[in-house]
Length: 560
Image (cartoon, rainbow, N blue to C red; front, side, top):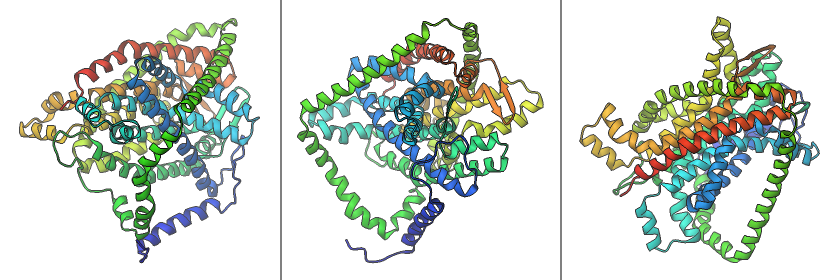
């Protein structure tokens, strides 16, 4: 195929890339950002800050995707691995992002002697901690709910190695990983400020980015800069949705299980895909580069796998495991040193703080369930509503919690309302999206012929939800609930101790205790609050959510 003609679509795409590059590099920035405590709040640097944040998000997402597929596969295929991985995910998702600050500072930053590379690695690690666990649970759910007929068929056709991954395992993960990737990406934006301003005690590292720009605009009282920074963030999130996530979700529809032949694609193609497909340059790249790469990819992977001996793979795995164990051993030694010290008196108030926080989370969860289930059903059953509501949901899920501080302070706190109300509202912003996107993914997996049968039987409203929708989405509901509670515990650190300008608003809770301990550099109280949260969350998951999920995966898995 020759590149014979150049259309106006090609011109628009090339001009868009050129304008972006000129806009970003007009100031001739350094390759590595400076780790100063004060940012330059010039509006001309906003595109550069957006690029820095976007690059950190991309790197963290690549690590998160690889980790989630590995963890989900190991947990779904090995009982021994499942007994380690699932409790570990429960523990890790229950640790707020502030709980990872000591590891980020002491391991990444001090290992690199405070260089920009170490600070960047720490920021990527912190973003990773807000993305990976949700995706790992999605991969595990996808792999454990593969219909038995498909597993038997793959055995009959002797699919092994790379071919089993490409033909069965990865396609099974695509639908739920697509929705949960979008959610994890939104969670990365949500905790971007905490990832780009790493502060514990006297140690303070500020990386140029949209998150740090928003926080410092608020701290300095530069409301116009804050508003423009927030609009930039919303513009980036919206652009990514239409360019990346909307086409990805539409592509993921072809991997949905169907009991009969027929398309699972509802609605028209994404307008971005329609626009790009009209590009002659894109068709040329697809024909000459992407097509051959996708065609030869599986064979090349299999050849590479065969050339690497099993002994080398085993040796590499053992080396990696030894490094991880050494790291955990060193961390455990440091924790023991902290634990054996005399505990401060404020540690006695941890149980009461946990109770208050749990009640706020319970209320926020009830509100989330009340509106996400009907909205998810509406989005999934109507392509028109899906195109309208899904971008709005993703944009709102990506807005950092600090963006709501001025609104909450003005509309709630200054009107004399109880401080628990804004705390519940902020926790809600960290919980509800996990439920919504998991429910959407679960509803989208309902086979088309099952919907047709329900339509033929005239099942509508509550009857349809009770007979078809709720049983079909129970596994996704439980997965979403697990991750929603993990996100809620994380959101506590942003909701129970709010700083806005010169004012501070706080309530009694474990999140507020963690923020105060982190600000004063009291590592012992940081450890005590994090451990208490870990114990509560893992106990809840172990004795309630995990048993509920095991029951749901046995009773409500689709078989045909």
